[in-house]
Image (cartoon, rainbow, N blue to C red; front, side):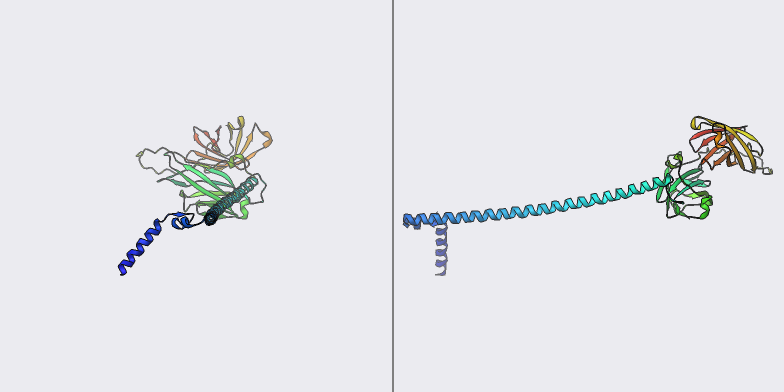
Length: 341
């Protein structure tokens, strides 16, 4: 009996599913309905269909509005993030411009005392790659809050950078720190300087002096020039024990020398050696092209035929070599000069 009931129910549902409908009314019932009943059935059906369509459209509109809202919120979030990033970049750029302007003002002489210093680095050795090499004296100025990178390269193409910074009265050179001292006003020399990182410096001499303003040369990108020396050929000689003597020739006390250079279209004049002691000497320079400058005091050293003369008034360093009593070289690695008797 139970099986017969299940089969009968299945057939009934199948017939119901296959039964045709007219406006929501089974065909058999529709056929028995009067005309007014059919019209009412049609009206009810259309009203229900319209309500269904309206509900579907309302759901679609709601989904579209929700999707549009989500998209707008996401776009607004992206715009806000971009705006915040641009504002941060603009603020950082403004701070950087302000820092550069302040540094430039200090170099022009508009900063407080001690905000600008002149640095001279000379002597000792610097390691480039796997070799310790000598280098030419380097002079530059640096302002409070400024970091300068000194380019260093040898003739084999090995390059490195020395980083120098000056902030809050402390000069830092690759891990070596020098705090402000009153005698920086007259100039202070620090001997036997070495660095703990970066290109290794050994036995260097560092001179620091407070400046009022920078020259154009001192503001150029600093470059440490390596002295390229040919490898010496070993020569075996009989051992002798001569008495060691140190000569400052041609810079001999009481001597008047002639000098000339190609700076500013050509300069020339005389140099009087006021005194000499061993490898050190002191000079008085006259410039025939600029007699209004008067007598300029110079100081220098000579060792193994290599001459170094410093002009503190014009902030010039003359580096040259002696050959047959004549000195040839460069001024600030830029202009040629010649000194002779």
